[in-house]
Image (tube, rainbow, N blue to C red; front, side, top):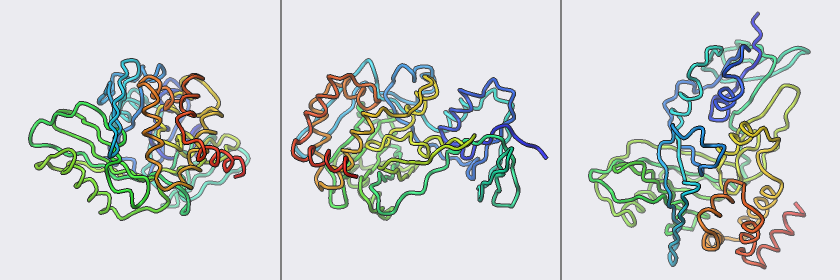
Length: 357
């Protein structure tokens, strides 16, 4: 009976990063288990280029020194040469993390059950095979609470027949339907003929796929003004907008979104688990960031029209300040500017609600 030193359950971005950064030179025996191990999925991981991300610069797919926000009345553009906005694709990340690593085996199976005896964990797969391991890293997607606030989206990469002229990342464009929740378009020009267009909503209710796709079609027609294009890829996701509280046990470690890496107010996670790994810190997010996120979520739950929060915050900050805030490295002055940009009465109500919850 083989007992592995380490088992990774789920081989998403956080597990791959942990393998690369903690165990690439290790002699420990490792197994990676993922029900979609050989999937061709190639989603994007977005981040601002902070110091701890610079060692991965060579696999960045695209970067932008300018990004924008829009609603019906206001257009805002941020510029930052210090921290450009970047994306890396999953397949490039996977290749980067697993290259030159020889001490790992793989299983493309779903995990049905995990139990423990005195010395090791017993991982039962969907074909009733048992895998034995002394330590587990679990990065499987957590179950999403039905009645909770969520970030949910569908994105499509379109191939244009003519060279487009976009050179700015659109982080939030609120010039779309707001009937189903806080809804915006996220739009990234990947190269001169490909654009990622993503319909994103903050709400409790997941919608039919066709709803997001129709929103994308309308946006391409009305705002990108493209008539001839082909959809070449599609991605979709649901992210929790509440604190994940999966506690670690003896040699059982939850990582990624399951371990609380996702910033609940924005959905960003990639840079936060990399900071934890590279800087050897205890928590993904500071107490201040978690407190602000909690207030923000209460605000969203109690106010239907909330796009003005993002617009006001974007107006009050420079590109460098905004990127530092989003990456959890803002100084005191920037934090104060964010708080002062909030609607006072609503902020105070949400602050009190967060204390009572």
